[in-house]
Length: 316
Image 1 (cartoon, rainbow, N blue to C red):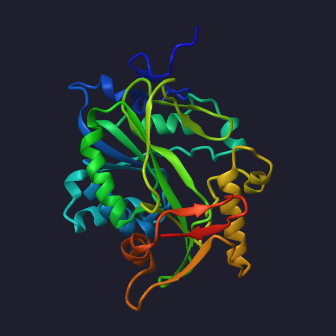
Image 2: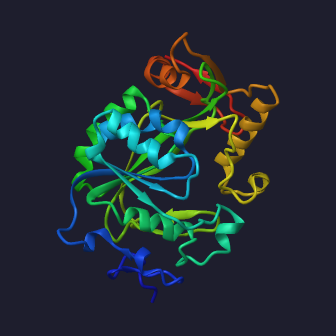
């Protein structure tokens, strides 16, 4: 009989680093309090944090950011942004000093109980949550005005709920401070909200980590247009993948295939169908324009005939 990962007191690692052993948060003294915590696992995400953190800090009870060896001042920038907005009391910064395997073949080759494993890393990050609910959030995901309101409403409602929430997002490919390309030709609505309990922990999957869930759970999907995922066209968007070219042959990488297609097309000077070019007004950063003005005013729903071909229709 296989013992569930979340059972017992916690996890030890193969390297014997007792200072990075995992104690499950529900076993911590005092248990878990009501509320929701957003957990960001980041490396070299400093440029986008001024857009990512303020609405997230306002919407959640707490935000935990785990810096995995950044060399661009990510941790310092996160602390600065939280303090600038008067929300430092809702923010915690942690450091994880081990090189974590990239998704794909590199991840597959690493033992699940190693400090270098994606699954172990994620479990360690979430072991520092002290609320009964958690949001798995990325360091490049920015809430729109609607998204902030929706997440704030949910953050106090889901504190006791046994439910998983799917949060849609759209890729925003940033060319400059004034111009970006929004991919409305892909519907990406992953599971981002989870209760904190032994039933919801991370295990190793073939190409990345996966959060376990009970066979029968309630799932809720939020509407589109609540979040964008920043993709800087002058950066290395796929650095956390072992081999991006493998997207073309994996049945599990439909979303990454689309991102790879859009990324390369834009670098070649082409705008794929389903992708909208957006130019911000003078003096307004394009990320602020998209999240505060453009998306909130866009007609609903965004209807896509086939995400692989990205035929897009906007209708009122």
